[in-house]
Image (cartoon, rainbow over all chains, first blue to last red; front, side, top):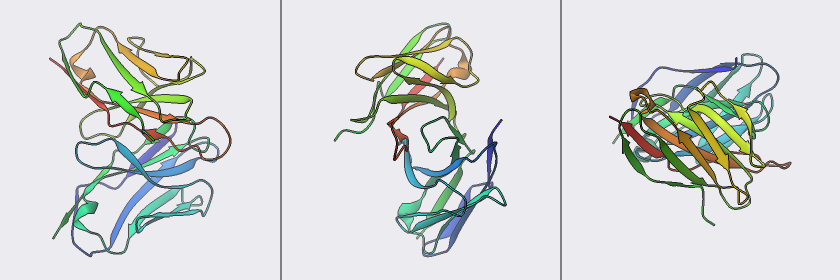
Length: 113
Length: 114
């Protein structure tokens, strides 16, 4: 079945550092890729999506490109803030997001001032 | 515009008991999915409801069942609770029509089984 693997956490950075979180997947067909963020004690919020090969999604300073040839997507931000501390999940879906989401295990990010 | 809402926020049960969790989808959404998130893990898909029927199901036993009502709200029922059922249960809603199909998540129900 479909699966998603994220880089091991936790990740600790200083404020204004550059962030990269790696995600690779295995899937049949042509999935859509999503990045969700979960702040402490809350549910998941959609951060950005990329629905086809070489799509680049962006939101709140975060960017991610859907690399079909390497079956990967890497979440990046040029200058992180303390408020970015959260758990980040990579997920895939087989039909533009309406079908079930398959999540990675999450990467916990802590930003120190 | 209210987002996805879930009730209750927290729940404590003992082994063998039964539990019902509730979810109201975001306005305009007709499809509801349920996920189980164990501590430190990513959410795992339980099932999805559309037009009051189960449309997809993940790898969960029959102890997990659900229902969708005509107003699109949904319930998740778990029978014969096990300690391993302790988790955050997330509900997500989406619109089945063409266009933007992102799933929006509720805050979750934290279930503790003692």
